[in-house]
Image (cartoon, rainbow, N blue to C red):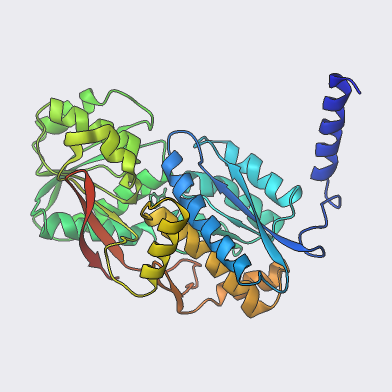
Amino acid sequence: MNARSTTTWIALLAAALLLPGCQPAGNQSGGEIVVGEYASLTGKEATFGISSHEGTLLAITELNAAGGLLGKKLRLQTEDTQSKAGESATVVNKLIARDGAIAILGEVASSRSLEAAPICQQAGIPMISPSSTNPKVTETGDFIFRVCFIDPFQGTVMANFARKTLKAKRVAIFTDVKSDYSKGLAKFFKEGFLKEAGYEIAVELDFNGGDKDFKAQLTAIKGAKPDAVFAPCYYTDAALICIQARQLALNVPFFGGDGWESDLLMKIGGESVEGHYFSTHYSPDADGGKGKEFVEAYKKAYNGKLPDAMAALGYDSAMILADAVKRGGSTEPQKLRAALADTQNYDAVTGRITINPSRDATKSAVILQVKDGKFKFIETITP
Ligand code: PHE
């Protein structure tokens, strides 16, 4: 066979696998259960996808070591969204049509979860986002779940933090208009901050995720004389924003949400991110319990690396799925959906998980500060 006809054959085979009714039988009737995962393994938010994947894979490995589910082994099929718009829909279609995944785990970023959720909902395949916090994600429909808190809570937490800990009266807000997460969190923060009299928003400005030059907006922010700046964006942008703020001698505290959490925040931002704060879902330094075992297992699996929030939530998303398969005794989509919706008081690494009627989890948040190039645990805030 020459190269050309090989390519044609591969194309035909791929097309056949995508046709309904032509799915590989491995998923339900064969010897394995396929779990689909989509994550940003490369690109601008690569550390999100890598961490989340590592946590998810650890859970699948542990489940298989304990005998799998319903007498079958699990296979995690992971697809890279490349941190790009448009990829999530493509890869999730593949995971459902080509691989026959019983459920889809992902994504971290809300905009990408929002892209794939309608596909899962339409196909009637449960999706569990480990860590997307925009409320709209689970509003997509009754097949869409998450194992984390949502941004109305996170926004309130940071509004209280700004008032009580930072003692800020006037806060500037700097939003990434390309991100549903950023827009939502900015809005919820603002509502929370203005709830008490005597507090005001000094100025609201925006940028496009991926921009490199923030000087014009930061100059305007400096001119508005805020006591602090809330920048609910992702780590790459956050680091550059902090660097340029220092260059402009805009020396007030900056703070963000879970999107800041990455080692790259410090690697890119260096000195400029020192002392700044953000909220997130989990800290290996918070409290003991089940968290300890997870930290040890994760370090063992990944060369001593400490798990972050995405790793812990990725792990929890797979464990919540496994728990639902066990309780419902089935991987059949409707039964699995019902069992997921019934999740109550599951003892997870990131806290107790009860899936509420909106298919979200009510959980506490933690606040971290960048201190000496590391994340320092400041406090836990319960809902
Ligand atoms: N919550 C963010 C979003 O919805 C993603 C995120 C979760 C980032 C956890 C870091 C840690 O887009």
